[in-house]
Amino acid sequence: MKNLVVSSGAGISAESGVKTFRDADGLWENYPVMDVASHDGFLRDPALIHNFYNMLRAKMVNAQPNAAHYGLVELEKYFNVNVITQNVDDLHERAGSKNVLHLHGELMKVRSLKDESRVYKLPCDELTDKGLETSVDTRDPYGDPVRPHIVFFQEAVPNIEPACELAQQADIFVVIGTSLVVYPAASLLHYAPRNAEVYYIDPRPSAVPSYVHVIPKTATEGVKELIEILSK
Ligand code: APR
Image (cartoon, rainbow, N blue to C red; front, side, top):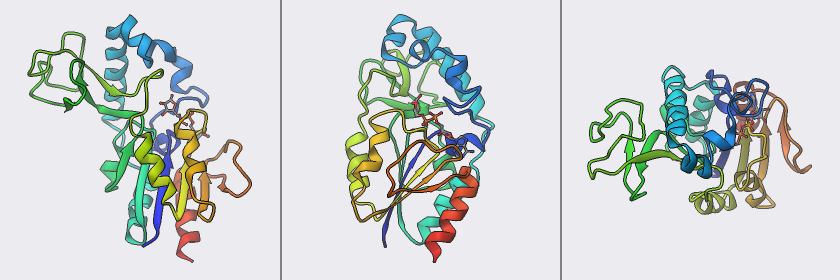
């Protein structure tokens, strides 16, 4: 089977009712990103960041995967599909995608501040807070405080190496719903082999090299068109 590698961003979750970051009325229009999603911001005011991610988790509870997420699961019948996502939601997993690699962390997880290998999926009865919310007072079974399992701005992206390796193995590389402004995620497109077919699905696509086949549509419409193209 050919390798089909997807690199998805907030746009694939837009039709599930999840706000993107940089569109009109996007998340960063309403929250100061360096206060609520940066390493320095967490050192400065951890309570503010706990509350920001508690709010995002509460919004995610009602979100459902959309036809674009399910379309990628459909493609697993014909291709070896790996999804690399900048998204911290779990919509790809809930749609049924088997291979999902998160570059910027996972909203439904927190980890020990003392030992980053101790990761807890919320809700988690091992924590002193049993629901989807955490605070500076939340403790894990070792008595340690926790933090969102999110890659904050100013922090390294630990999964970028395996992501680059996947991109280098791609026969088909598909970028969906990302403004391509945040690195190193935005560079993945350039790791696809020269002879790979590269597609970019986005209703307002950013500038990309001329060899990229741009499908200027929403994720649901664009994935449907992609499936038609690939089924020929
Ligand atoms: N279908 C497909 N794409 C869409 C849709 C849709 N229905 N609606 C909007 N888009 C596109 C926009 O045109 C834009 O190109 O989704 C993209 C969203 O861009 P951003 O808001 O910048 O989101 P993203 O590229 O995922 O941001 C990257 O920035 O803040 C950090 O960590 C955060 O992972 C995030 C990273």
